[in-house]
Length: 222
Image (cartoon, rainbow, N blue to C red; front, side, top):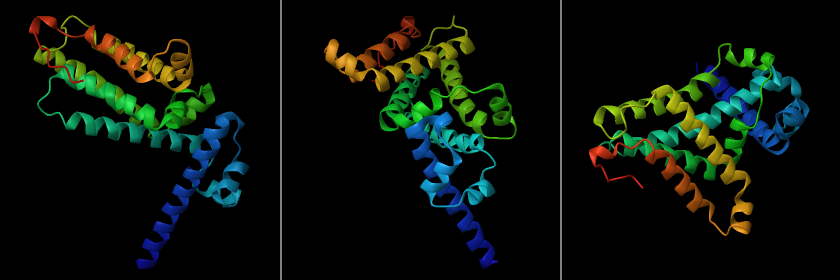
């Protein structure tokens, strides 16, 4: 039994080593320019060993994406669960803060989530029995739930279409993230604005469009 436990621990260590190495290669070269040879070299394992744990580059990329979503989901959980007495609107703002914290702290994870365009073949592989969709879907479901909670407690307008609004918010947050990651020098150099200040202004603009002003709830979660 102890021998089996040691073997399982060794497998997990090797798997994590391989994912760590893959992250470095994908972050520096992107998905299409990265090779399994380079990942094996970075991990200091043979390519044959890599294929014991991951049958393709796509599957290994999936593992990195899963890790990125897991990090983002944990930040979101921590932010929102710390505000048990808050309204749905206030928690929605906290959701946005969590997303921006993720982008600032893990810009490479953000890029790897947003910058890869899958082919139909890759999508079929990714959809078949993996956690990619589950981890990504958790975040979108959370956004829907926050909108619904806000509509129930009256802090968010009752006349919105929840799913459509969730998609629009998510798309806007992706755009804000790209602005923060890719355009910071432009914002600070040309317009003399801090990225933090502009991001706060943009997110405030998005969320205030949803706020139910009739409720008179002025206690926004800044």
